[in-house]
Length: 165
Image (cartoon, rainbow, N blue to C red):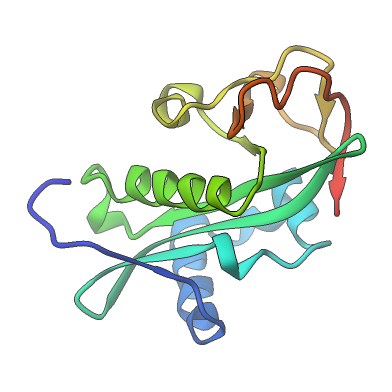
């Protein structure tokens, strides 16, 4: 992190309105048409593995994880990851991802999947899903479907459609 004091806290219900305003500023109205957003509309994200980032009392970032299944295997869907534009490229997003993955692993979760850019998310251990192994319920560039194993070999025998849990 460059020159900012960052505090990462569990998301609470009281954070919802501020996070939604951050999503509006960051992603705009087009976010609702994306496949990952449509999938998240069908399931409530898990507060025990969703976090906010703050500098002082100012909310500068958020990451949410939602329960899904890949075929019959339980997993988490990471996203949205949102960072206030003025705080980008200062390590906030990576800190949120790393914190969320560490907490998810500590709580016994084994797999996290997302739609995103491999050069960015690869820093946190995400790798492309092999072609045809998992499919989103709508259009997604297959090269952007990424998975992180929180336990060795957790993705070895997993395949199928991604759906809400």
